[in-house]
Amino acid sequence: MLLSVRNLHARIGDKQILKGINLEIAPGEVHAIMGPNGSGKSTLSQVLAGRETYTVTEGEVLFDGKDLLALKPEDRSTAGVFLAFQYPVEIPGVGNLHFLRTALNAQRRAKGLEELDAMDFLSLAKERMKLVQMDQSFLNRSVNEGFSGGEKKRNEVFQMAVLQPRLAILDETDSGLDIDALRIVAGGVNALRSKERGMLVITHYQRLLDYIVPDKVHVMAGGRIVMSGDKELALELEKKGYAWVDKLGSAPQ
Ligand code: ADP
Ligand code: MG
Ligand code: MG
Image (cartoon, rainbow, N blue to C red):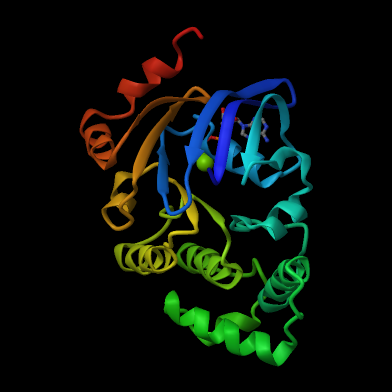
């Protein structure tokens, strides 16, 4: 199994947010997590990536059979766990390209590969940008300056295309995307599907899943996965609305 999440509980401050998540992703699988706002979807992605504002209070996460929670965030990234950097406030003003090269070279060092110099990296980056139909002027802008919603999302998929993670986590990839940008982002995601790679696509909206067809769909409510199924579940959910699952999420444990 690529990822095994077992009985995962996590809190922020005194607030318990994840209340026993169980999830298994095999290599090659794309899983979608849907759920109402506030159900804990982003918290799950942040906990998997190791963002430090969250405290795991119970449970375990195995990545390739190894204890993921024991690794520092940067070591998780180097091991192949990818969560797109949406708000990289910790590195203000660092060029998009520079930032990505640093992350890629950390990965290459861990694999015993030679680091890419600026020139080689630039050609790789340009090739991968085509995947998301991204303009090359993008490379020189700093990470979080003046990106539109669509550009931020393209940038996330571009980061993924460069880093080629074993497990890619995409959180709310459709927020702020018009339908054309959505297609481009989904096209990039689909191009990166492979039999070695697992993907966890987190979304509030069913429409993203018209373009990224998942192998499995899970519904989160109240910090737990309350339902799992195949892609039909997403359609059912759209029809019935989230009030339907909110009730399940507030049921006593
Ligand atoms: P989702 O992504 O499903 O909308 P989140 O994981 O963002 O849900 O949030 C889950 C719950 O955790 C919400 O009730 C939210 O208000 C709360 N929460 C998220 N971040 C923080 C924070 N930094 N401090 C306190 N509560 C938070
Ligand atoms: Mg939210
Ligand atoms: Mg969220």
